[in-house]
Length: 152
Length: 152
DNA sequence: TAATATATGTTATGTTATAACATTGCAATG
DNA sequence: CATTGCAATGTTATAACATAACATATATTA
Image (cartoon, rainbow over all chains, first blue to last red):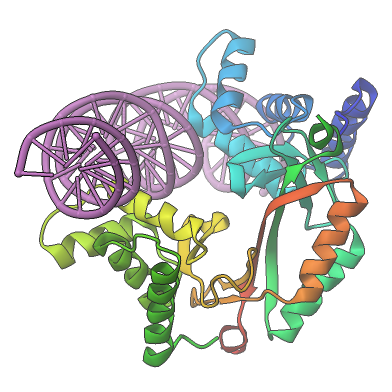
C-alpha cells in the first residue's frame, strides 16, 4: 500500500477546515493539532502516541482527556475513524462522503486503506435486512498483508 | 433476537468437549468453566465479569491472566470470538464450520447473533482481492437494533 | 456586561490486558 | 522410579486504554 503524499495530506486538512467553517463546527487549535497528527502519521496511531506528540509540539504535558475529547469531536464529525481491532485511530480521506468506512490493515507495514465500496455496503445492508436488524454502525476491519508486504 | 435454549447450550458445550477430545486439545477445568460462563451468558461478556463469576464459583479469587489465558485458548481453537467493538466475548455456536465469524449486536438488549453467510464472505474476499490484499482475519461487527427492540 | 454555552485544564480513577517469574502436575525417557 | 521436560496455572505487578468529576477559561449572545 502507498502512504499519502504531502499534497493529499494538505488537501485533507484543508477539506476539514472548510467543512468546519461551513458547518460552524469549532475546529479549535487542539482539535486541529490532533487531526493533523493523525493524518500525517499515515498509519493507525494510538491515543497515547497522539498525547506524547502533542506534549512535544507544545512543550508542555497534555492529559488523556484532552486527546480523547478531540478524538471524539473528530469521530463525531466523520474526520477520523477508530479501528477497534487495534485500538488506534486513522484519518478519513473522504469525510461526509459516507457514514460507514471499512478498512484493510496491513499487519506488517501497518499502513491502512479505506475500502468503502458500495457492493460491500449493499451486502452488509442485505445481511442486516435479512435478519430484521436495523444498523446503527458497522465495524469492518480486515487485517492481513498488503501486496508489497506479501511479496517480501 | 432469541437467546439460546438450554439444550442448545448443552449441545454447544458437548461439541467443544468432543472436538477437544478428538484433537487432543487440553480442555482443562478452567478452560471449560470459562467456556461455559461465556456461552451460558447469552450476551457478550467482559473478561472481568468472567473473572468475578469464576471467583464466585470456586470461592476463591482468580486473577486476570487466568481468565485471559483461557480466553486465548478458546479463541485460538475457534470456540469463542472477541467482539472488538465492545471488548467482550461470545461463544461460537458452530466452531470449525468456518474461520471467520460476523456479528449483529443489539445495542438495547445486548443479544448478539452470528451472521456468517457466504455471500458476505465472498464480497469481503472480493474486496480484498481487488485491493491485492491477503486476509488473515476479519472483524465485522454490525451494531444496531434487533427486531424486538426496534419495535418497542 | 452578565448570563450562557462550549471548550479546556487537572486530578484521580476506572477498565482492559499483559509481562514476568514461580509453582504445580503430569507424561515421557532413561 | 528418579529426572527431566513441558504444558498449565498461580501470583504479583504493571502496562495500556479510557473516562468521571469538577475547576477554569474562552467565546457567544441577550
